[in-house]
Image (tube, rainbow, N blue to C red; front, side):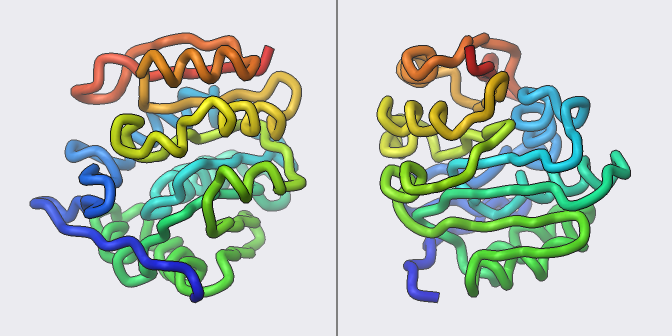
Length: 222
């Protein structure tokens, strides 16, 4: 692995916190429930899933969003793999990702594959999942990506602490790599995020957030 690992601290309950961004990787209440509320329901999933569906993500983190998506895909019984591409500049070590995912028994079937991908070439290939972690700054790697996503999980750290993943130019790149009628969702309801997504061509709606967060945002490509 030729990319830097992300240094973290651990809070009570096994929640990893980024030293770089001083922000937790997932909800202190229930990270998996948060993922399902924000990123699955926020993109009208699993209802929209179909063979060949492609999810893309800004910020791989612990891989918990991938776990939630893979579990939802398997529950549908659809043929072939779910396609999942995640852009990550500061990846966790495989060991830290496994430790974080240990808090979620449902993640157990995927933990080893996620750890191996983080420590290796970023690839996970199974009959039900074809996933790739793209290492590096998304402002450089996303414009060069040749793929197109049906749904986006926008999951960088808080915009005030990680503004690079919420820049208007990057949101425009997200829109350029979104299929017609495609969607995006994020836990952030910051005005600058809503404006950047709107300017990029998404029809943006602010909806109730998860837990203590009053609002989140979902968007559909106009």
